[in-house]
Amino acid sequence: MTMNTKYMNPYLAGFLLGLVLLTTIFITGRGLGASGAIKSIVVATVDGVASEHAEGSHFYGTYVGPGKDNPMKSWLVFEIFGVLIGGFVSGLASNRMKFVTEAGPRIRPKLRWLFAAIGGALFGIGAQFARGCTSGAALSGMAVLSAAGFITMLAIFGSGYAVAYFARKLWI
Amino acid sequence: MGPFVPELISDQLNLVVALVLGIAFGAVLEQAGFSSSRRLAGVFYGYDFTVLRVFFTATVTAMSGVLLLGYFGLLDTEAIFVNPTWLVPAIVGGIIMGTGFVLGGYCPGTSVCAAAIGKIDAMFFIGGGLLGVFAFGELFPLYSNFYDSTSLGSIKVFDSLGMSQGLFAFMLIAMAVGAFAVTTVIEKRVNRALAPSLEFKSRKHIAAGIGIFALGVLFIVLPDRKTHLINIVSDVKYVASHPVAMMDADELAFRIVDREPNIRIIDLRSTDTSMSHVLPGAEKISISDLFGKDWLPIFSRRHVKKVLVGMDEAQERTAYLLLQELGYENMAVLQGGFDAFDKTILSRGAFTPTGSRWDADVKVFREKAREDILKLIAENKNKGAKEPKKTKKVPGGC
Image 1 (tube, each protein chain N blue to C red):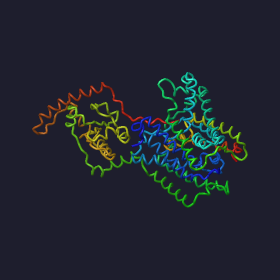
Image 2: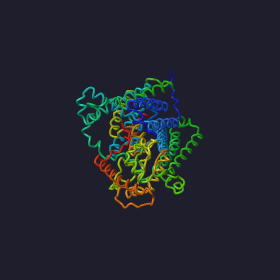
Image 3: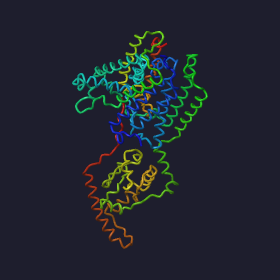
Image 4: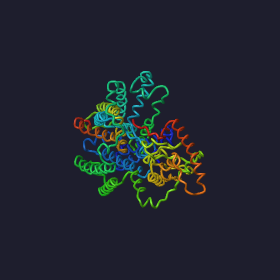
């Protein structure tokens, strides 16, 4: 099966993404996000496995406990579920469905998996401190002209460029 | 007027809305090629600037949309969520995330998108993300103070930079267009034959760039909606050509004493002048509060006469014309302002006979009204200050 890599014009895609974000803000008064869904999943899991520990914790405690809704019943969890569906449908329609590992030419897939996991962990941690990731804090924040949005975006991309040289074997 | 949460859209329905918007989000991300870590990482090495193009374009589109919707009164910009700033944690978090971006090749949203089409590295990214948040949560006491440090509230970027909203919007748009031009050149140099930007038809794109730049210039001169409307209604010619409905002190007094249900007293005076009396049942609303959704339920009832009480008639007239511009009906300006009402009814002042045959009755009426109204005012004071019925700001965040 040949993989279709003819993607949409990025400016058009950006415009459409901007419209989705604008619609979200217009209807719900908040922006899009992603890292919060990952946090909700973790909180729900910890609460499910060890609820006393969760309730007593400063971090999990604000989301769980008597009288509080299931943390999975959150706006972002439902949204990210939609992202899963949307990505799937788009990939299906554009003939891009394939189990594959993307990596630069100089690296083996298994090492790529390790770094993907490390990258994910770092994102998970960083998004807690910054109260959001590229979608929630940076993109949505910049759309409403919050200082946090721009600060976070500059920090993400600034450090990305700084680290890029050392990670070049992963990609080029 | 948006946003429609929580008044028109319940919390439950909002979850469905989230799902639908998420589907659109995921589809666009995937169509843009954000389901490929190699493509995403390309922005850091110069071989593929898709991330920059999509990100910047989306930001400019959404920001412009918010500004325009706010200007036309279609979106209540005071009610939307503006993510608050914790300065140092935001920077530290951003640095950690940037490192994670280059090492992992994804960000949380794109990783879900990529995993949906089978990218195994994306699945490892998500797994790592779950473990990372778990580790963060478990070790939280170590840095919980740091986590809450340097909180600056929901500050806007243009305030921090000391410039106007419109000027910042223009600069951002100008930077975006400039960045698009520069990165296209870089990409062609890095890639030679394989640059993604070789697929762009130059002329169309340059034309679009100029158009967007023009929009940016427009934003500099576009005043924010409040100032714009206040300027209109303060203009002398406008005031002269737009008559307002008046109500004199006696009529208002009668209606208060008569407990008429179909009037609402709107008190425009600032809080420090309320050393004087607050009329019974009055809502304290300042002129800048007239624009949002907060008081829409009161203003939009056409059968209820909104009596505007202010320091002077000019203030009341401005509010009247503003409300009229905003589309509301059935207001009245209190003749002579609160002052006249005070002198005529509330204070035991000398009654100036007008020579009409009703003088005696009016005098008696005013005496009685004074007693009644002062009693009502005192009763209201004891009831305590009415809680301002502010629309809840939408909660958001991650």
